[in-house]
Length: 264
Image (cartoon, one colour):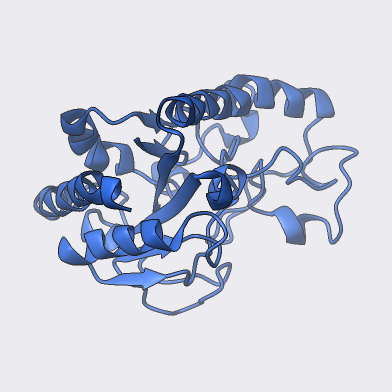
């Protein structure tokens, strides 16, 4: 079974994340995978694919991280080398990739745990449930973790100033899915008309790392979509014509994967 997830499309800010209150829309949406759930939603519905969408804002709790991805200037008493340099964009974001400071002081361990219980564990428990059901029924699962990315790397990225492909597909250098599934996903997006890159500048995040284990028929891959093909990166608003065209191409890509997955 093909299963989709979108861990960074949530825009709700939990009441507990008081440090995010009062921020303007452009700042709040700077690193969000805005509209990704909407772009993939129609094809998921048509094909009746499980599609797990984030509810909460990634600056409060980033679902593509581990609970341990914190430092002492993010959470009081946390142990991490190099402080915030390691986790400025960790489980709780201290700073945007554009360099805007979000958190002025660390939160308590109690608040950290509360946010995990409210935002982090429900998403991951549900994803585990969907994957386990497929594994039990089919003896395997194929999972695509859906994201978006800036059209050009910032100073916080591995590729500062570089223009990016329209789609980046990542499997942590072959560690999170079979070569056959990776090749199928790349082929699908290519056939749909996208310019595709592989494992650059993204290798794949914590989600695919947690759930991808190809030797056990657990296949998980990350797909990043260039925001410039469907939205204004300046205003963070959707571009209707571009988004409609992109949605049709995404529909073609996912349909191709779904149709041919039985052959691998």
